[in-house]
Length: 262
Length: 299
Image 1 (cartoon, rainbow over the protein chains, first blue to last red):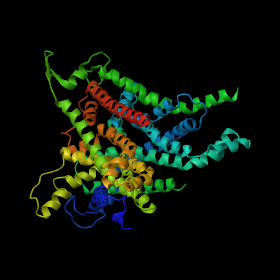
Image 2: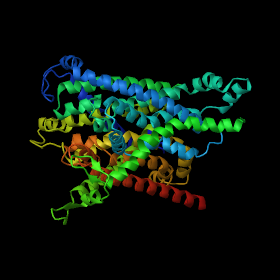
Image 3: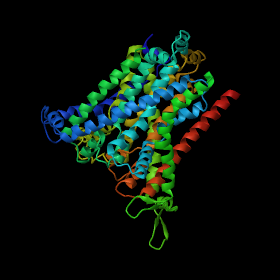
Image 4: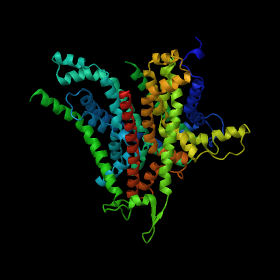
C-alpha cells in the first residue's frame, strides 16, 4: 500500500510538519552559528573564531550570575522535591484523605496563575515582611513555583505504580518507613528524578519573578542575560546562549531517557 | 492510638508543608494584592492602606488637577492588545499543532519518540535565549532582512522587530510545544478502527477528519488552549524584547508599575484585572466542557 492510499494520511501534513521543525530550530541554529563569528558586528560574517567563548568564560559578572542561579536552583529544587514528594504520597496513596481534590489544586496553584501575578504576590509579601536579603527572597519564591513541577511527575509515577507491592512489604512485617524506603521510593525514583530536573530547569530559567525581585543584589543568569540584551546584540551574548543551550540539551536528554526507561 | 487516627495524622502532616508554603507565599499575598489595589499611593512609591478606588479609575481615566475625569484609553489599549495577542497565539498554535501532532502520530515508534523529543527540547532551552534569537532574525540587520536584500527582492524593508507581528511570532514560538503535546496525546488514544469504520461507510477523508478525528481530539485541544492562553496573558519577555517596550502587554504594564513608575496600587489593580481575565477564561472553558459532557450523556 502506497503512502497516498492510506486512508489515515492527509496531503500537506508532512510538508507542514517539516516547516514547523525548521521554524522550531532555525532560531537556535542561527544563534549557535553566529557565536563562532570573529566579527564584532553579529550579522557580518568575519570568519570562524572561538574568541567570544573565551571572553564569555572569563566574564566575572557572568560567572557570578551563574553561581547565584545554581545556588538558588539547588535550594529550590531540594525543598520543592521534599515537599512535593510528601504531598504526592498523601494525595495518591493516602486513605480517607479529606479535601483530596482541593489539596491537589492548592499544590498546583502556581500553574493556575500567570507568573507575573506570582511575582507581584511575593514582591508585596517580602516588602511587607521587610525582608532584604535578595538571595533568600529568590530561594523562597523559586521554591513556591517549583513545587507543582516537582509534584506532577511524582504523582504520575505513583499513580502508575501497583499499591499491592507496598501492601506485600507491610504483610511481611516491614514498618511503614522501611516499606517506603525499600519498596516505594526505589519504584518512584524516576518520577522523583524527572521532577527534580524539571524544578531545576524551571528555577534556572526563571526571568519574570527574579527580575521583579531584583533589588537585593542577587542577579540570576537570565536577569544578567536580559541586561546584556538591552545593551544590544553581541557575539559574546551568542556564545553565552550557545553554552546555556548545550547544558539544557544535555539535561533534557538525560531526563527524556530516564523517563523512557520503565 | 488506633490505626485510623494515625492515618489521619499522617495525611495532615504530609500535606502540611506544601499547603503552608502556598498559603504563606501565594494565597495570603494575593489577598494583600487586592488590598493594595484599593490603597492610596505612598508619597515615595509604595502604598498606604487608605481606602480608595482610584487605582481602578486610573485604568480608564486621567484625573485632572481639580479632580475632573478625562477618558484615557492608553491602558485599555494594552488590555485589548493582550487579549487579542493571546487569542491569536492560541488560534495559530491550534491550527499548526493539529497537523504536526497528527503527522508525528503516524510515524513508526522510534521516529515518533525522536520527534516528540524534538518538540519538547525547546521547552528545556532557556526562554530568554529563545526569544533573543528572534532579535537576530527579525532585526534591522537581521537574517531575514539580509537574505531578502541579497536575493534582490526587497531593497530596504525596514525592521520587522518591534511590531505586533514580531510579538506574535515570538509568542507562538514560545508556547507551541505546550499545544502539540496534549493534542498528540489525544490522537494517540484515538481508536484507528473508528477512522476505518468512517471510511468503510463512505465518509470522505475530509468528513472523517471533521466528524470523527477532530471531535475526539477536542479534550487535547482544550487542554492545550489553556496551557497556551494563560501564560500568554501574562507574557513579559516577548513584548519587551520583540515589541520594543513601546507596544506593551499587561505583564509589562504591571512590571512597570512595580518598577520605574513606582505606582504599586495601579500595578496591583492591573494584576487583579489580569487574574479576573484568567478566571473568566478557565470558568468559560470549564462550563463548556461540562455542557458538552451532559449533551453526550443525554445523547
